[in-house]
Each structure stands twice: as C-alpha cells, then as structure tokens.
Image 1 (tube, rainbow, N blue to C red):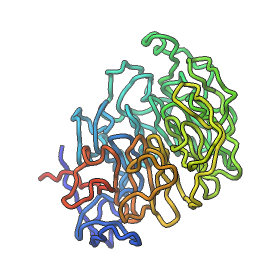
Image 2 (cartoon, rainbow, N blue to C red):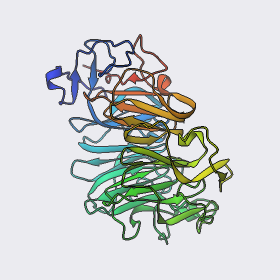
Image 3 (cartoon, helix red, strand yellow):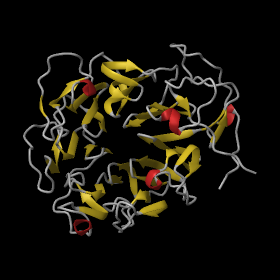
Image 4 (cartoon, rainbow, N blue to C red):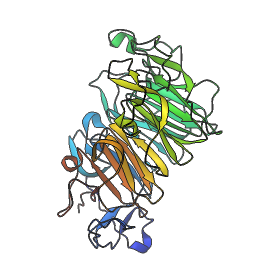
Length: 425
C-alpha cells in the first residue's frame, strides 16, 4: 500500500513531516545544522532504533516507520518484501511512543503503554504466548500477553525487556544466557523444539528481583538497568566479561558464563545511562564514558598496556574492569555498535571508536564524517542513525548505502538522509 504524505513548512515541523529549507553546508566542521539540499522534504522523527541493516523510528505524530532489510518481517509493514530503501509504515494503525528493533524482531509501545511485537517467533520473542520455529514470523504487530502497561521497551537477540510505571523490569523470549533475569524459568515448549537445554518464555516475566529501574537497555545476550539512585546492574552472558567481573565463570542453563541474577557494575559515580552491545558494554558516568568487555579498541581506552584476560567464550581478550574512554570528551549519550561504540557530545557531534559505524580500528573517539549535529543517536552492529534538532534522521555504516535510497551528491561514506516514503495517488 502506498500513502499520500503531506509536507509542512519549517514553521510547522512538529507535525509528522516537514518541508524545511536547509542549505548545503558542504561538510563545514563548525556547522550547527544538518547538511541537506534546500527545499528537501523529510519525516520528522522523535526517536529512532537501528541494527545492522535496518532501522525503525517514531514520527512526531506517533506513526511508526521502518526501512532497510526486512528479514523475518522486522519492518512490520505486513509484507515479506525483502528490502525497503524508503520508509514503510508499521501496520495496524497504532500510535507509538517508542519502537525498538533487533536482528529478528521488533517491538513497540503505543501511547497507551501497550506492547506489540513483530518478526521472528523463535524462543517466544514476540511475547504473545506463542513459540515458533526459526521460520515462523509475524509480518504485522501482535499484542504482548499479560495486559501490562509499560513506559520503556528494549529489544535484544530473540528477547525483549520493558519497564512498567513502577520501574519493575519484565522480560520475555530467549533465556539460555540469563538475559531474562529470571531463574528458574517456567517450562516452555522451546525445550522440546530445540536441541539441548534452551529455556525461554513467550509471556513477560518479572525480572531482576527486587530491583527497580529508571531505564533499561539490552543487547544480544544480556541486559542492564539503571536504578533511580544511579547504579548500573547487568545480567545475562558473561562470556566476554559483560558483567564487569571475572568471577562468574559458569551458567546453569548454557555452556558460556552467565548470571540470571543482576550484578552491580563497579563505576565511580552516578550512572546516567548504560549502552549494551553483543560483547561490550558502556556507561555514562555523569558526562564521561566508561566501557568494559571484549577487546581493547572497542573500549576506546587508547593504546596503553591495559591488563586483560582471555574471554570465557574464546573470543580473544577481555577487560572485566570498567575503564574510562580517552580523549576527555563530555558525552550526553552512548551506544554500543558493532565491535565499538559511539557517543554524542554536548555540541551534538557524533564520535565513534573501535570498529563502529563509519569508523575502523580506532583506539580512541574519532569524529564521524559530516557536518550534522544530532539530538539523539542510536546504533548497533555497524549501522547507526542520528536525529537532528528538526527531527531528520541520518544513517551511516557498512550497509547504509545498500539498504537506503541515497540522494544524488550525498557522500556515501558519511551520514545519508532518510528518504521520504513512496507517494501514491
């Protein structure tokens, strides 16, 4: 289905879409606005979520849009079309407050706080009470079971976690690495569908014991939350010392080290936020970035003789102690993306280190190409997107130019503006 998209002037940019007359800034490093052709139209977003080769965002009017590769139906537009280089609307007519996406599935919260998920059903990742095989998918949103109302949601590798108004964490989907924060996990059909002991749940379970959180983030194998008092707690896989300890070496449900019980991360001050990746985690302590886990370059700690150990899962060297990212940058947000991480400084500039979107083999934070200044940043697995003050989304990384419509004259190695949807009669 094609939609007629209405455009608005710069004065009305807080509507769903905006027609904003920006001037081409030619990569000027001191620019304070985005580089875009004059008169260009764009969807104005309030939030964005990315992973590897696709992304989803919530427009200012609450409509959900996704673009990129559509493996397992992660775009949620009700079709199995493999690639959408322009945004398509998430099916169902819902108005969203948030959407989070990962490799195999996506979830969103409506403005009423109801959770819906779509994509792959493996391990009960959609939370609607059904557990499917790897081939079973939902092409459009299905409601998460339990009648809960949530304020925040985060999607990981075949699982998801959400917070209710009281700060209680609820998780569902795959639990073999301890990422659900629950033990024991009630018996589910996934133990008979797959070889070995692979616990899962297709309905939300209260997670993390008595802890309450003001925010939650998840990766492929673990989850972290920040308490109202500014403490960071993580649970799940410790295969690359994601839990900031070298003492947790076993796991009751899998062969890689893990913890089903939250572990406090030793950080030197009040934690503002956490960023969770596949093998590396980071935290924003006041306005300074601290990282721990897999490798040395991914941590942004510079070329020093840091003490490291063999990772428990055999993936090279790991650092169990959180260390400060070098460079003296004052960040306001962080994301872990690929084998690296990115931060947004106080001026809205994006910096990345390690092997992150647009950056390779960087031992310390390196400025992302382009003149854009961002208000929000999200990234995962080599793909990142940022939102400017006007709500325009720009994306970059290894897959960006192959899964997005690239306007003429755009630097393919830098951020690419997200195009308007197809417009039909």
